[in-house]
Length: 332
Image (cartoon, rainbow, N blue to C red; front, side, top):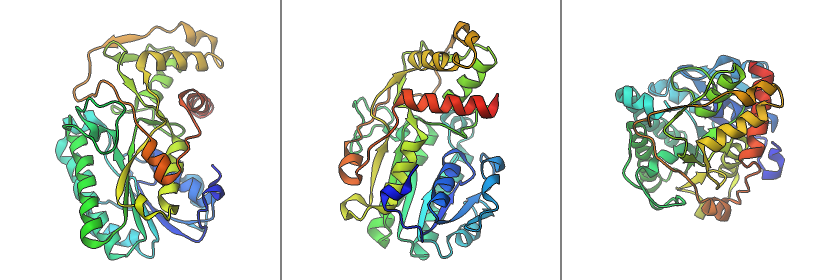
């Protein structure tokens, strides 16, 4: 990604929490490529050392192994920082249903710690990863930022509480905040392994092994799948915007189109067949719907376009082609 086109000052010192994770490590790479100084805070609960190993020799990169639940770790990470990109969290709806206490400790208590130290360090702006899960049972389509429903999982509750805390810190303490409600992000470095792996890398790995991907439900559930470079663009736009109306609010981060799980698998089989023609013959299995899953998700991105100048570069097809190529080269 060419960050120069966003007028991102190369003199900034930016903290990326969860910087060894999927989105965080891509952010670290992008910021360092622009000449910025980057501090990465990660406890490696879900982040991967291999995601940032190639950055360790960069004089502008600092790794702090620590936990956002520890206030001292947060304070150390925030020293002399201009901006915070807060990506650290325990994701996954099923994980939060199985262990709501830990999800709350990390996503709520850890988030509050980061807000407090960012306020005290007088950072210019606190940009944080929010979630489309906040829309809950809202039937409104497409999803617009001002209309949400009742949360359907402990994870969704934690991400909504983040937005409430951010708003309070903006109005009470004057800390500029911007929340980015991510919609089903996918792309390079997303972990295909583990019980809580995201659907795209999980399906890709199964298909590469000629194993049948298992869809929860009948495959008609739909999502606004969003390629990683669109997410990087929004984080950078959230840093550089000088539009005061653009701060202290939340934005959808998506492409603005929805794809069913059946359509998704069909595209994955098509693109992977370019590398292995046998993949097109792999069958799909179906199982019960998961608890806490929202049937359909589609974002309105008009607010981001209007206030931040957001112009997503990748639709589902172009993003999947990039992602499939990366997985084939790196994980085969």
